Every structure is written in C-alpha cells, then in structure tokens.
Image (cartoon, rainbow, N blue to C red; front, side):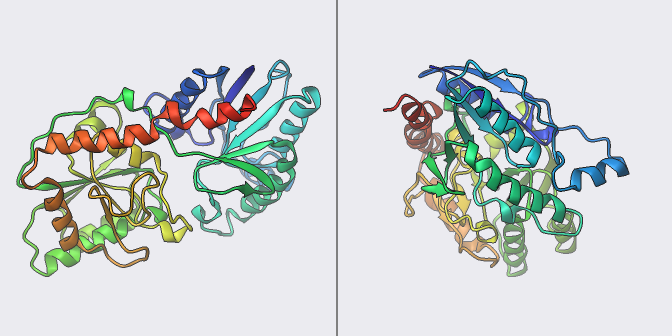
Length: 368
C-alpha cells in the first residue's frame, strides 16, 4: 500500500526546522512509515503580496483565499492521501475533486489539528469573507474526504466518520535534562499566543498573589508571541520581576528555558473555544521534559486526580496562585526532582508516543 502525507501550511511560522508543527508532521510521517509506504510532501507557505487587488480577490466567494491549488496527477499512483490543512476554500475543493476524478480508488484522510476551530478566530469586518468562504467550502469538500482524523473524541464531523487519536509526540527526539531546584518557582508557557490560551488568567492570579502579600518568588517565562495587553498588564501591576517575555524561541535557547522550568502552563482558556479536554502538542512537550502542568482543560491521557496536573477552574477567574504554590511543593518537596521528571516522562511516553498514536490510521487503511 502506497500513499502520501501532504502538509499544506498557511503561516511561515509553521514550517522549518524550528517549527513545532513541522516537527510533529515529520514525526507523524515517520510513524506511518513503520506500517505503510508513505512519502512526505511539504508545500511552501501561502504567499501574499499584500496589494489591494489581491485582498479584494481573495475575499470573493469562489477564489483562492490562501493558496491556489492545482492538481497535476502527482497522487495518481497512491492508495491513500493524508492531508494536514487547516482552512478550506473552493480552490481546495476543486483540488480534491480532481484527485478523486483521476484516481477514484484513493482514500483521502483529512487531519483537523484542533476542533472545533471556528471560535479560534474573532469574527470581524476584515475576516468575515474568509470565515464565510471556509464554512461553505468545507461542506463542499466533505464529499471527497473518506475519513477525518481528530483528537477530541468526535465520532463524526461534517457528516464524515472520524478516526479519533491521542495527539502523539516523538519522545525519542528529546533527551530528558537534569535539573536542580532553586529558591524561585520557574513556570513556563510556550505558544503562538491566542486569547484562548488564557495566559491573562495566570497574570491576573500573580497580581492578586503579590497584592495580597505573597512571598514565594515566582518567575513566569512567557515564551512565544506576546499579546500587547499582557505586557501592559505586567507593567501596570509592577510584575516585571516575576514575568519575563522571551518572545519566539526555538532550538537550544528553548531547551534551556524548558530545562530550568518546574511547572508548565498548558491551556487556561479552553472554555473560550469549547475545548474541555486538552490534547495539545505542548502538553506532550512538557511531559517529554518531565514538567508538571497547570491547565483548565484536563490533559487527555492523564487522570483528573493526577499528582502532576493542576486543574484550574474552567472559567475566566484568576488562577489561584496560592494553590499553585501548594501544588508545586506537593510535587517536589522531599523528592528527587529528576526522579519526578523521569516518572512524568515515562507515563506520558507509554500513552502518547507517536509510533503508537498513529497506528489506528494505518490499521484503518489496511482494513484491520
């Protein structure tokens, strides 16, 4: 059985050796290759000139909104095509139609990295045309898709049956570092930050903690794109000694930050986009580094009473930093912090290593 994994990124930040998304794609492809003959195809990011004419054309109902798709028969020899693509438009629909027309036996699988994703975008006058195009085009695309691959328990999306997976991670690519505790409690978040990450809740909790006489030295490493209101909040509440905005980091600098961190923030705004359970990539990365997590959306492979998961309320309330401090001490006091990290890593690897999590896709393709 021969097939292809097609990755079609929209944003430049989602490709390249420093991209977590591309690393995941390559790990998924490598895992599929353990079971099937599969070739990886990574398209360049969509390109925009930014001209007024282009902005108008991209918003028209049946034009290409993100990239101009053109099928040239490259998958005519394939038994399957696994696609990771986030947004639909009618250019993409025509592309799928052409693939099925030229190769009727092909099975098309379509991965939705997060679902539902409609609430990830605030509807505005500038993006309304894109949102409408996406929502109508995905209905048209559904007739060409045989299975949707998702990670959030859905049995069916857009009338298409799902293969429900656990989000996997290539644990073998990360060496578990050795750590030494310091007097400070180092906390980290890593993301292309959006409103639904909910980091404002942690910042609000820090402000309340110190305004009420909190004495622990908490250092929050905010890694990734910065929401301007977050930086202003830190300045207004004089939290500069406790919050460090590192910007986008990758490679060795990111590894160093993860190595010195003892708590990781996953998702604190899941309620803002109907995200009750987290299957996030960063939760796996924290586990690969042996870091306990703070979240309001329980991690999918952890029991809710896990000693390595702090569950904040599923709402907009400030995070209770006093409770976070107690959680930190319950995890580490009187214990070898490296033994703790090793236990977290082993538990996660046994349940979400990529070689295991992609097997249901191969099983379905092979009719097992």
